[in-house]
Every structure is written in C-alpha cells, then in structure tokens.
Length: 136
Image (cartoon, rainbow, N blue to C red):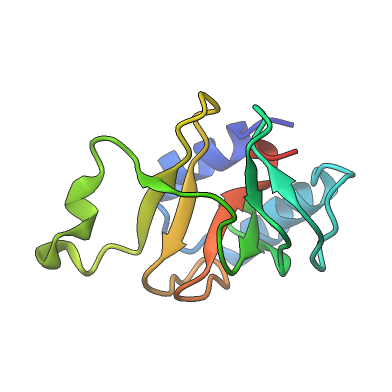
C-alpha cells in the first residue's frame, strides 16, 4: 500500500479529525498495511531507504486518522530542516504542529519533530515521527 488513502483523507478533511466510522475504517486499513518488518509496540534500528541510520530504536507505531507513523525519542544522525520549511522555526509560527526535518541522503524522507498535540492522532510533543512506508 502506498500513501494514497492518507493523501485522499488529508485532501478531503484538511487534517481535521475524521468522522468516527471513517476514522475506524482508515485506522484498520493502516494497521493491516504496516510493513511486516515493523513491530507496532516498538523495535530496533530504522534506516532510510538509502541506508542511513535514522534511530537506534523506536517506542511504538502511532495509528491516526492520516496514517501510521513510527515514534522515536532521538535521531541517530544529524537531521536538517527541509529546504523551504525554515519558517517553521520562527517565533511567529510557534503554533505550527511540527518541524519538518530530513536527512540529505537522497531518500527524500520526511521526519516530523512534534511541537504540539493534534486531535487526529496520539502524537507526543518532543517526539519524532516518520511514516512506516519511508523506512527499512
């Protein structure tokens, strides 16, 4: 499965909480399509698809209205703010939910550093998140 369902829901609902029946259906779909090498309750090292170490372990996989994301405490490599996303660091944008980070290894990986909670998933402030589809 690719991220088409996640993208479709984001386009339709603009990251607002989904209606309960739809939320349940989407979450079941995300859970059923977590790659088999990942453990929903946490696990060991994660790498980008180009082989760069992301973290040495992860705590859990969070399944929300807009996908399944791996939660970890600290990166094992230097992360950089995605080009064009530097504004997220400015004080006037402190309300933005996350900082968009990446690893410049050609993988185009998107790593979220959570700044605020959201209503559509159990993301924790200060944790890092990456899609289950972007890691090996």
